[in-house]
Length: 353
Ligand SMILES: C[S@@+](CC[C@H](N)C(=O)[O-])C[C@H]1O[C@@H](n2cnc3c(N)ncnc32)[C@H](O)[C@@H]1O
Image 1 (cartoon, protein in one colour):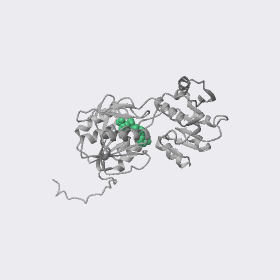
Image 2 (spheres, rainbow, N blue to C red; image 1 turned 30 degrees about the vertical axis):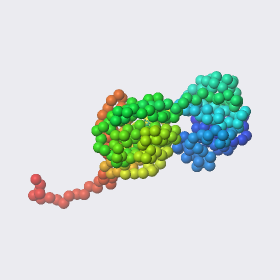
Image 3 (cartoon, rainbow, N blue to C red; image 1 turned 180 degrees about the vertical axis):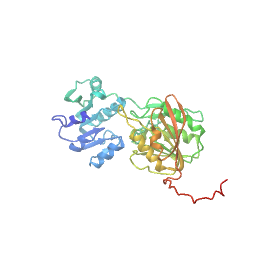
């Protein structure tokens, strides 16, 4: 990304450790800490020897002379990072915001300047990106949005409000695709073990556990903020003993297997572009983690050709479609070995009926 190329321009980083949000290259060079909620970035950073965490330390645990925040697509998530960075800075420390024009860096800088009541110092401005600095004063810092509450209608008629950290999927209301998948659960045979791949704040698994009191669930997501939200929600719903929630990326093996039902609302965007790679990685994991004959319900935008990625692993059928989405029912093939054609002994025709 163009903005990342600017962080090593002369005068951008001061000598000394840096607390870096949503990136780790500055921390790799200067020492410090990378805050990386996305699992693949955290794995890469730790493999490169960087001290990396999935969430920011508590204020008071450590202090930094400088903090660098990489702007994200989600403005609420960026503001949460800016507030965390502010709280981790030493008095007089430097708050750096880095981002490209495609992420709206100009308006983000204006808003931050207004909230901090300071003029930004532009440290680098080229390649359609910029890095600006503010000084840590005594004020309260950036005005971060609080986490939101999403209503989940459950089969027993209750409507609990789920907690959603800034930046997680469907942080404003339940996704239409999720709603459609939840409607499809009614016709399913009761499963024992449910897998929720890309769980977000957990609506699919929690609805399944509420519908089928004997079932247990494994919830997996690559975004640590989703994992944190789902964990809070499981406790609030009294479901924590019936589920396990793990930080996991679809490129990694599934931590458990032998599931009889998987529920998947796969991601299909990487930034503004359609990116089906994480979805296809999830499908490959379904092939490994479902019990033989186990089923998955997958919700997809009606135009996405997910069936192509599933057919080598089992059978698919479209169970329903509405509001621009379709539900694909997938059944893992019982015999995974390729069929070998063995010629039959020639029959005289006498055993033909
Ligand atoms: C479309 S959202 C669905 C969330 C939730 N199941 C729902 O229906 O509200 C897709 C989820 O997949 C997660 N995700 C994205 N890429 C992933 C990956 N490579 N591995 C695992 N999870 C991923 C996202 O963090 C997000 O929570």
